[in-house]
Structures are given as structure tokens and as C-alpha cells.
Amino acid sequence: MTDIFRKTVAEARAKGEEIEVLARILAEKMQAIHGAEFSVMLNHEARFVMIAVK
Image (cartoon, rainbow, N blue to C red; front, side):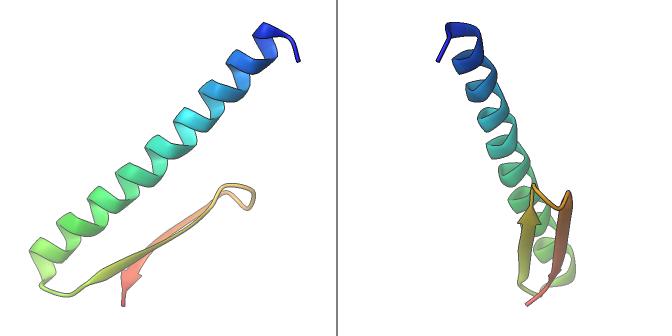
């Protein structure tokens, strides 16, 4: 693997992890507002994010 490829892969992984963290934060805020527990369903390959009541 070249350095540029490794850097690109690392950046993509970091962005994916950031999306997951942000989705969990949003679920926590929804719980604070609505009083119910929310779950996060996320699939990067399908380009899908869902936050729903458990």
C-alpha cells in the first residue's frame, strides 16, 4: 500500500467513526427530549442511518 492510499483509507475510517458518534449523540438528545430510549441503525454501504425508539 502506498502512503497516500493509507492516508485516504484512514481518513475515510475516521469520517465513518465520526458519523457513528454523531448519530449516537443525536439519539441521546432525542432520549432527553422524548424520555424514551432510542437506537441507532447505520449502514455505510447502503448509505442508511436510522434513529428509532427501541
